[in-house]
Length: 119
Picture 1 (cartoon, one colour):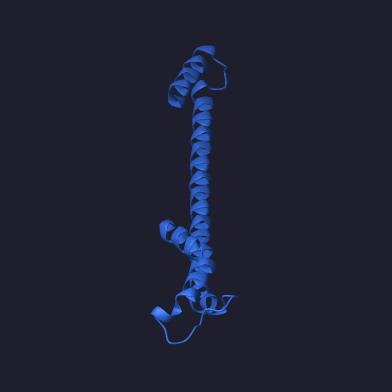
Picture 2: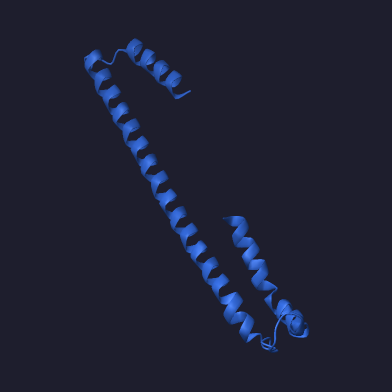
């Protein structure tokens, strides 16, 4: 899709040169000279539909990018909620198991487990 986008943009960019070339050589392939100096015919018949196609491709690419950003952010928020819930449940379990006595051995062991989980 990106290749076709770039190719179409390059073709439209060189449409003026193409119009000049076709204006000089119109007798070889046509019975009338459609290629005026302003390039109205080539712009109407050739460049305008291509630009419409490029514009459509760009809008669809932006829409898909937006959808991907939203999806990634939702997954990130879900992961953060799960991690917070896990941390909250671990802390509440720690408080119940230590009985609130503040035992330093339990707290040190728990912090060691958390550090290993984080790695």
